[in-house]
Length: 134
Length: 134
Image (cartoon, rainbow over all chains, first blue to last red):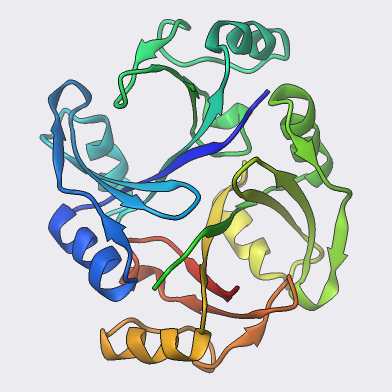
């Protein structure tokens, strides 16, 4: 069912410092910063040869990333995102297997303008997993 | 400097349950379990189209993964690994930029039989980063 690893999302307390680390220290190709008010974050994409790293800084304290950073003040990996071909059939399969879909249980439109869901970390080996329709 | 994302490593308390989750619930292609006594882990590779997820279960309580699982009993993302072409020149650049290489500061032979280093999470946005010579 799952296809490519779409991205690994890293929550960071300071996007400018994080971007400099990936650009200058690790020598990676990074995008400009992009504000996504609907998702409560400012983001920079690190473009690797085979996938992306998304650096996420909360826009304000109501951002879902803020609570995570409160618990992980240096930052940390927030979630991983796998692509699926058909998100509705993915949800049916997951629910049948006993995995919990967060929120309403129906897809939202994610940061890339495509349908996404998040799965409960306790059902996914302690990791927050996003599925995005490719 | 960094090339492909080589893998994302997820520490898990029970490799059999974790493998079933990726194989049956997420419908991914998984390898057989492989014991790596030198690294204190038993591992299963989840083969995605563009990269790998490595599921890691500690072999015993002296395993470096054991302490992590003590703090994250459900499991969690342990590290991410980027490929580099030349690990010695990568180390020189990183040290010049102020990033700390863990251990002796020199490459070890990693789980794939290639030279690897780990960088201090506090220098890498709160994430444990492995670099592997491609």
